[in-house]
Image (cartoon, rainbow, N blue to C red; front, side):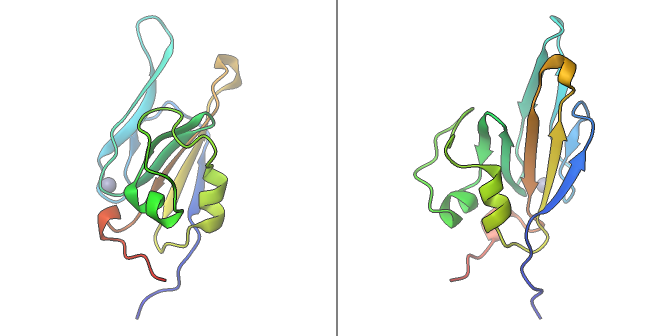
Length: 131
Ligand SMILES: [Zn+2]
């Protein structure tokens, strides 16, 4: 029997500078660190469960499932894609069992802002969109 759809579960984490791993397959998705120049650098590598990777500046990665579900225009790649689309809209509009979003907030002294990474329990390309 299928479970009821649920809104994405938001899990707020106080510390940005941890490696971020997918809760379902364990792959490292990203993590902030300080490079040799002591600036903040971030790399992201989505796994099959990654719905989106966003910051307050826009989306770093957005899955085809989210593009289709929200009827977005063909995806731009890279930082600041979909600047007119927001994580808030995903939180309001996504009903997906087993979906989780980690929300990170950087320390104010480095002027960093929030980062948001969403995961689906089942691989994103296996999600069925119901009418
Ligand atoms: Zn995964």
